[in-house]
Amino acid sequence: MKVTIVGAGNVGATCADVISYRGIASEVVLLDIKEGFAEGKAMDIMQCATTTVFNTKVSGSTNDYSKTAGSDVVVITSGIPRKPGMTREELIGINAGIVKSVAENVLTHSPNAIIVVVSNPMDTMTYLTLKATGLPKNRVIGMGGALDSSRFKYFLSQALQKPGNDVQGMVIGGHGDTTMIPLTRLASYNGSPVSNFLSQEELDKVAASTMVGGATLTGLLGTSAWYAPGASVAYLVDSILNDQKRMIPCSVMLEGEYGQNDICIGVPCIIGKNGVEEIVDVQLNDTEKALFAKSADAVRNMNSDLKAVL
Image (cartoon, rainbow, N blue to C red; front, side, top):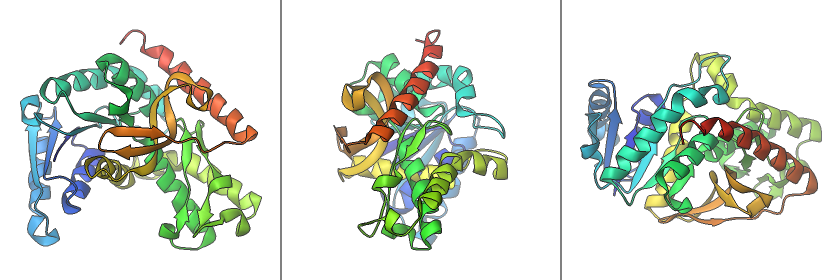
């Protein structure tokens, strides 16, 4: 199975690294517009093969899309990362043209590929990719919910002082600091609601920390985070390539689900070999429904800025 990752920056390279040492794919191609950059990252990863013991072939290419031919999954991380004080929404004008061009180029060589969009603002870039390519909606997936949910579970585990792998939780809605919705009501610790262990005040603090999780790291690092985003992409790609049917919150096109139409936004999905195989209705309560509708309005407002590109 072959995976192409367009954009060999921190997130793209981390994704390639995780896919390789976990043996998720047999071949990974890194592609970047910067001369020699993807080739260097690929060589660096391949020089780990004998110490981390993997057999995945990793190669790099400078803007030669022919090297990506026959990819089963294409991950798009292209675009500029966030800088301190910059919102994901501010990236629309810069990244929209880049993502549209990338999607068209990869499909020329891999017409059957499933596309995973990571570029920010992710929901809007997912919508752009779907509209610009005309692909069926199951083949265009925005990654943000997997990352947001991993951060949510981290903050829950810290509050509970319990192992993160024993905690379940998900984040739906837009992949933005003010639009994501950590579902504290449905979060659990080994099958027991976390509300049995944490007060409402503590849960509200966890939700708030989750919503600014990306911005917090951007402030600390001076740029966007990459370890958790890269691993989250690999987790999603693994579910596709190995038909794992995991339920992962992803940004996908809604056609009536959750009361929304003509919008890509984060909802729980079953992810398998066909991409999005099912959108799961988790039965939101009235408060959660109102938050989701508000989030959708914000995402739809950002989508209106795409008119010039589409």
